[in-house]
Image: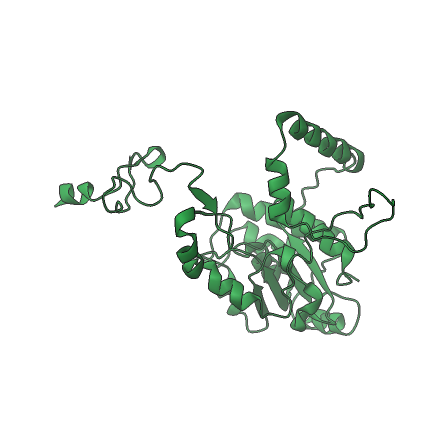
Length: 308
């Protein structure tokens, strides 16, 4: 029986697992759809989700059943969805004959930036890297390491948390240090017991911070620690991908906490249009934001009023 099952498996050898792929092969093929030999000119990035590719001849049918179709359709009806709002815009270009700047700006999407990088030759690519390193040296030369573990995060540091919550010492130390630095800057304030409620009430009626927006939230465990240790009452998790084992379930068990997860790319998020966040002071945090996401977040910061 076991031999027969092995015969029905894809014949692609997976070195890291020291076994053949466990998927079933395609009809009249030794390999599954993921490992079927392909030529680059046959496969193109999916227009809806460029993270995966599709055979050009199957593009029409794929677009009707791509997993992200319904998500995109649902997202487009949301008031906070604005395609490319934080993508950045091209500089004004002068008309070659008149020298007069053209009117308006063109949105530069992540896909356009990615294609521009891929189109560079080797010398142009290294020239771009040199420019990035030069700018980084000019504006980041005074950044110092700051590792601070606040007393408020003692429960997490000691591992005295819900056993259903994944605990990895490395990540806990990183998250605690981020919150420790926020506390050092005066952004977070630890007030225990009944005074926690007073902190929120004061925040809602003053310039305090009763809400947190986490960009690139992933599973949301940075916010989980923040909610456990600082009594935050409102949480907005911004993440474009779907994850299993999220902190959401644990966070929703807190009766005093209001949680909202926004599954959207930062590039398309008009934070001013999130109804439940309007007129509410908040802080924005993020861990492991990749380069493109950081750029989008900076654009959102400088070109919107939501941080006032």
